[in-house]
Length: 360
Image 1 (cartoon, one colour):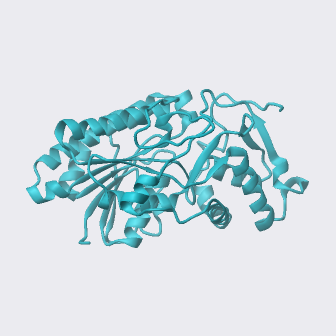
Image 2 (tube, one colour; image 1 turned 120 degrees about the horizontal axis):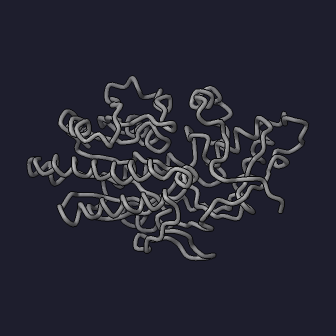
């Protein structure tokens, strides 16, 4: 494939940085990273590719219309991969305003700039242009004990975060139906892997465990999620944006349904093996597990039906739950310096929102 110009918004974040590493390391494309660098965005996640001549960084808020216009004018993208978003459910419960602004208004800005740019392209480039909006399975709400989210599942978001992402999904589809902008939407399951900000479940548990701190589990820990390794997700996103059909939606899942408690106990067992010098006199890391009051409106189960992307584009995840979790634990053990640097004092691995320990 000839080299393309690809704009990635939110490229200093967890999934965005994985996408950029994939693009630089596995393709010949040119990438410009547009990121506001909020608390969860860190350029250290891109330290292995930052000196590559095909990579550039723009410190820009996607709410800044004129700045985004300049990026399009200067870089002349063939593809836009829109990942910039506020993404933590707990933070959305206690402070929803940022989620409304970034996830909804920011997506509107990106769509308007992309539409204006795309409409002026020559016919061949217009036909090849793609706007890829990366979303979440949380827009579908909660499942019962069986069944899966498909691309046609009715939206039923539960939190300010998922509601804002659902709103942005609708905007993207509206710009396709109303203006003809060639868009693609993907909805993914829970991501995990290297470079994830430690407010999320898996890095939080790993880092707390090795320091002998409590491992807070919401409610009974029976919430079920489908876990997708972030590098599998990055490869899927590239497959979709280069081979997917405009106007279509693709669900991306890891085929790894596990309860939160299963995830935590698995991490503990891996740590027992890889780091047997247990802190604080404990004999097993599972002794650190504590149960805290559940999150308001906590969805019980998510599960992705990823047959469409397999059938139409030939994509399946490479990592199993066991291989992916082991690689993730090993990465955090080997990269303690990164973990220290991303915590600048504004976040100290507390659980966010209204939570207190409970007895079960």
